[in-house]
Each structure stands twice: as C-alpha cells, then as structure tokens.
Image 1 (cartoon, rainbow, N blue to C red):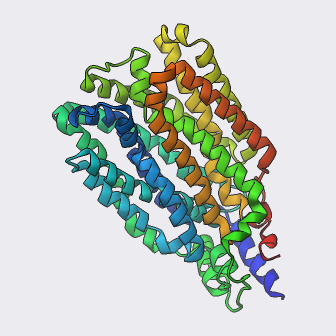
Image 2: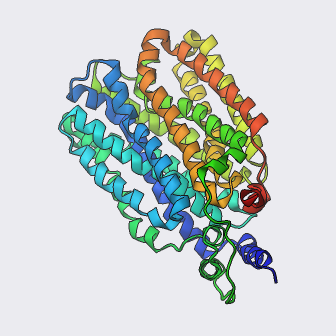
Image 3: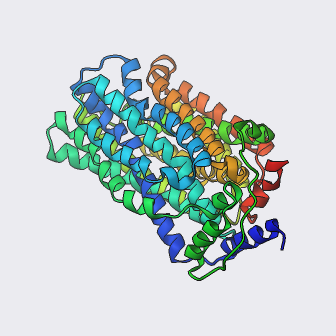
Length: 464
C-alpha cells in the first residue's frame, strides 16, 4: 500500500469514530481553559469601577488601558503560542498557558499599583491568547467529521459559564469584602479553575494529524487514534511529511487568512469593546451610578449576569445545535447581519431606547445572543478547519491575535469614544463594522461542514 494511502486510512478511523469517552474527556480538559479565559477577561468589567476608585484613576487613557491590558497580552500569546504549536507540536505547550493564568491571576490580585496591575494583566493575557490556537486545534484534530463542529463549539461554549461565574463572584465579593479589596477576589479567583486542568492537559497525547503530516510518525499517530477508538489499530509503517513548512507558505491561503482574521478583528471590537466596558454602557442608560463605584460595580455584575444567563449562554448552545447542520459560513454572516441591524437601531433611536430600560437591555442582550450563535462561535472554529496541519495553529494564532487586537483597540478606545461621540455614535461604528464583516464572510470564507480536515483545508496543496 502506498504511504499516503496508509496514512489516510489511519485518519479515517479518527474521522469516522463515534463520539466516545475520549472525546468527552478532551472537551472537558480543553473547555476548562475557555471557562477560565472568559472569567479572566470579563471579571475586570465588574472590577473596573472599583479599581478606578481605589487607585484614583481620573483619565480615560488609563481606564482604557486597565481594561485592555489582558487583551493586548492575548494578541502576543495567540501569535507566539500559535507558531510554537506548529513548530514544536500542540502537546509541547498544552498546559503551560494554564500555568501562566494561575500565576498571574494571583499576582494581578495582589497588585499595589496601577502599573503592576496593568503589567500582570498583560502577562495573564498572554496565557489567555495562547490557549486559543492550541485548545481549538487539539479538539478539532481529535474530532470526528460528523460532530467536529459540536465538539469544538462545546469547548468554546464554556465561555458563557465563565462569564456567569465572573458576575456571580463580583456580586459575592462586593457583599463579603470591603469595597477597596473586593476587586482582588474578582481577579484572583480565576487561578482556581486554571489550576484544575494543568496536569490533565500534560497527559494528552500529540494529535494524530500533527504526528502524521508534520513528523511523518505513523506509530505515534496510531497510539493517539487508539486512545480515540479504544482498541488496537495495528503496527508498522511510517508517514511521509512534507518537510519543514515555512510561514511564507501562508501566502497560498492569503484570502482565507484575511477572511478569518478580518472577521474576527471586527467581531471582537464589538463583543469585547462593549462587554468589558459594560459599566460605562449601563451607567449611560441610567442603570448604575457613575458617582458611586460600589453601586456601579454591583449593577454591572447584575447586568452582566442577566446578559450571560438570558442571552450569551443560550447563544453558545444554539450554535452547538446548529453548527454541523446549518454550517459555519451561514451562521457567521447572518449573525453579523443581525448584529449590524441591532446596532444601527441603537444609533438611530438611541434617545427613546435609553428611556425604556427593559427594551434597551433586551435589545442589547440580543446583540450578544446572535453574536454567539454566529461569529463569536464560528470565528473560533473556522481557522481550525480552513488551514492545513503544518500551518493550522499559526493561522489560528494570527486570526485569534487579530481578534484580540480589535478587542484591545476598542476596549481601550470606548471610554474616549463614548465621551466624544456618545453611545449612539459608538453604536453607529459597531453597525458598520458588523456589516463589513458580513460581506467579508460571504466573499472570503468557504464552508467546511461535513468535510475532513484534509478536504476542508485542501491539505494536499501544502507540499505543492
């Protein structure tokens, strides 16, 4: 049997294996990272009014930097860990990013100055960013074709519960600790879930596709597939790897990379820029008190909890049900389109909507619902499928890093933009971003549902 046929037949075992105990364990181990990532990124939303008050922050620049520090770090982490994942292997760094989250969640909680807080949050963000390309790729490369979207989405959907826990810990902190110290518990608590999976991550074997396509190691790939199917696969043989693949090979996938990175950039500007600055948005709509940081933090936590429970978590799980049926591309562009329409409504009818708090909060929540049904989920999944094995985590890291760059820019800029343009002006910008991203998705992204990773990524072109 030619070598290529032998390696393809091995991968078909993984592609057709029924969802089993191994998959569920892999989902649990990977998803705890995104539970923690969401907690760490969004806990600062509740803590921010208290931090600003405690440290006497009086300007929009510093306030924006505190909120955006972890996102800036996430850009670095996604790019660096993504490249390492392709050069050294997915397993090589799997678990190390969680160790960063543990150490710097604690250190950020112990910060005694704004400078230390920004620095520790930035390094914590490196761990958050590093988790995106590695966890998503490991889950995708271990999944079967029929349920790959569901399994990768199940990992990402844990973000919703991280958001909810962040709001709950915020409320608890405010009630059990002095106002000047409660923010420390909010930021430090993220170390606990991160610590729980470090050991389990280190025990997961290298993915069969990396072993075959990058290292040409059939024996190691067979061991990984035996973990999946729970039985002996066979012995003998060695794979044929294309040799060293340089980053310049990404030029063959330039249009796709623009599509995945550009749409993620535009989505995260809206999603993180608003979420992390919810205290500003809630105060502007008359929910909370800009003058009282404790009331502002409490109302932000309650508002975050309502949005997470009523809109964000349902959105993640609706996407879970639709992703392998409707497909990634349809969900992404329709989600962007609905978000754009909602933001445009806010821009045009801001004054009457602001006067009706339940309506305002409901429509605002709907932007998160359709964001999670569509682009928040699909921008995470598509880069694991559209790019070949040797460039998969690199491309995902660039895409995720682009997203977090957009998030950092808009999170940093929103306080100043709101002061200069008002929220109606901010929503007009977000509407334009969403509609551009919808068009970008239609023009540059191809559908991947129902295809093996080799088919979806056109793997054979990497060596040509």
